[in-house]
Image (cartoon, rainbow, N blue to C red; front, side):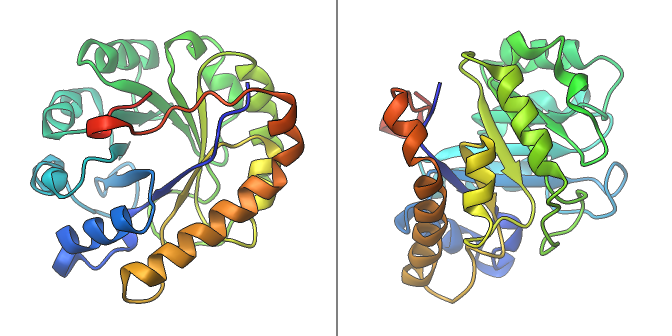
Length: 245
């Protein structure tokens, strides 16, 4: 199953002094989803923001809030992020003792459920929870900081996960060092959802952001043209009111 490309700018790279304006700008610039990186200073060596900030910025856009929880333990915070306005909640396979239980909890809250894999975590970690997933997130940098360089070693992992997913309606997302220069390789390997932070937030205006998003999208879509001709596209992206379809 080949799905159309989704671009999810990470607001970790935005100007936090005017975060609401930045979200409105990337919304107008053509972002499909808004990626929110939540860091706790424990699971990863940095602290970003929490559920209260997600709640505060939720009115700034109707686009899907793609919330990536880099926190441990994660289970006590799922409800808070669900209530704050998350549409997709992604947890790390390494962040808790019972991954299956965490995914059940996310779905019980009425949200889409995702699992993220750090660079050293094998794809076998999700083998027995695939049917509880709406999204798999492959980290192509070690989580904790924006602006890192893309790890090409993860391309083969992306390919293997694409094969594991098969015909399941699961999005395959990539986060870490994604740019217009490597978007084609990422898409060719099988990813359909690209997170980009620094590569999107270059410049100072919505027009700059639009050009950056468009360049990433064009590169990714060009790499997938033969596959798109062979398969029907069944998108899972924001429609009316920012719902996923």
